Length: 143
Image (cartoon, rainbow, N blue to C red; front, side, top):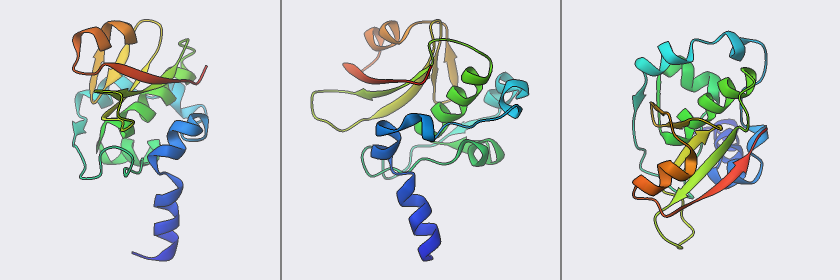
């Protein structure tokens, strides 16, 4: 791995995404016209070996091009689209199974939906947490 590639990966390390989520979502007019539902239908979720604090997020444009990624990658694409479409409030939720501070899952959310690893659920983030294995989420609001 070259130094430039290593530095790019470090810059997209999960703790940075948690701390500064607005820096990691896609911007521009393309996201408002993006066929999110069509893209989601072909999205292939994969869990990487570095889930949790060791993970590095892909840029939303790279995730769209590859049509595959982990939960954090999908959440960043969903948040990019939701922000461009004016859905509010939009945020990223980093989900935990216990009080041990290692996120096990990431989702995007707005007032009416949760975007989770290739699935769009018509529910709030609280409703999602109530029926899932996760006990709480660190919410990072984007808009």
